[in-house]
Image 1 (spheres, rainbow, N blue to C red):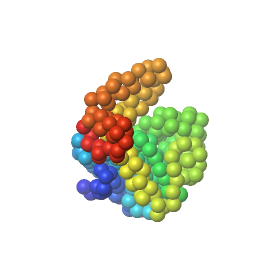
Image 2 (image 1 turned 180 degrees about the horizontal axis):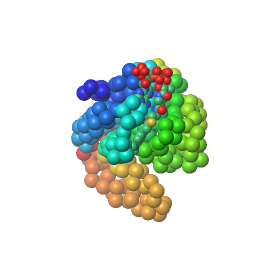
Image 3 (image 1 turned 90 degrees about the vertical axis):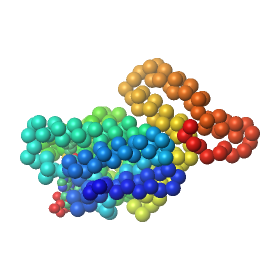
Image 4 (image 1 turned 30 degrees about the horizontal axis):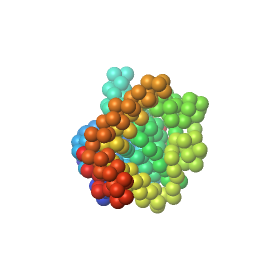
Length: 263
Ligand code: DAK
């Protein structure tokens, strides 16, 4: 891969790095195509539970992803713009539907499509150097990778609309205060903390985590009465797993449970 780095850490944690630092990791069609291919491959590992939490980050000290590639977009026709958007949407959906949790470790600029990428992840953590904005309206376009919708759901329509209409860039502490990120760390601590968070997730039963992610995603936008009904079949299905039997037996027998297998 030209634009991506992938590294497997201990405890079923993977780190995927967008590696185009000379352009602040901007999303050109090459990056988008590689993300599609790579996420499809990694999804197979996640289905088998050999990968149980994925961390997404950007290469270099300055940027997570500084948006879609403006140099590439500037001369697009309406049809090309739509096609470019559709390919990007596939990446956003692949992250959102990824079979295990995805953490965005935001190490710098998360602008436009870069912010939208983080919104498709399950959890966002940031370094004190991170900043967030949707600069699209200043470029004559709108956030086209589901940013308006996902940001509104996360931080509420008021903050989302302010970010879209003003293009103002907000720092990590402001992102924390509106719930856009869960935690903020010093830059040198970001990856250690991301891995610690990922390992905490992977210490739990992978089938249960996958089921919880599916229920959480499927519930978005549904009335409470409908979304709670989604939970019941998923809850019941957990009782078919070896991990549930072992974890509950271990509790009752007052012993540590054996490692979760994802079965
Ligand atoms: N695209 C292409 N190149 C970029 C880039 C970008 N988004 N951001 C930075 N770069 C490149 C710069 O051109 C520069 O390249 P060289 O000149 O060295 O060749 C290099 O990265 C370093 O950037 P700077 O020299 O500008 O670095 P500074 O520290 O001075 O400034 C900056 C950093 C992040 C403030 C600045 O680079 C900047 O404002 N960048 C643009 C940020 C931006 O506006 N991003 C949003 C892009 S719009 C769609 C769906 C989604 C989208 C579009 C369509 N459809 C459904 C159709 C998404 C749109 C966007 O994301």
